[in-house]
Image: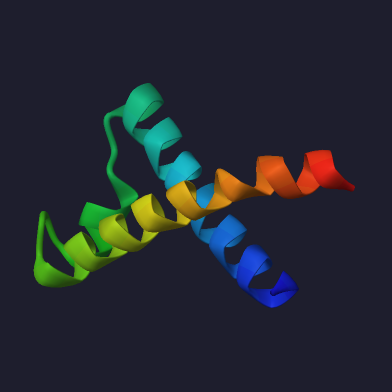
Length: 65
């Protein structure tokens, strides 16, 4: 379970960095690398979103420790 948490946390961090780049510089790194709304970039956006939803459960695990 710890490996999954680290993998998904990494995806969330990548998403946060991408949003920071969009906010500060209007530069979408995912679209730059994989194409603007190509099937691959859409998969990456979806995985980052699902990772963020999953990481909400980290609050419950942190609080229970």
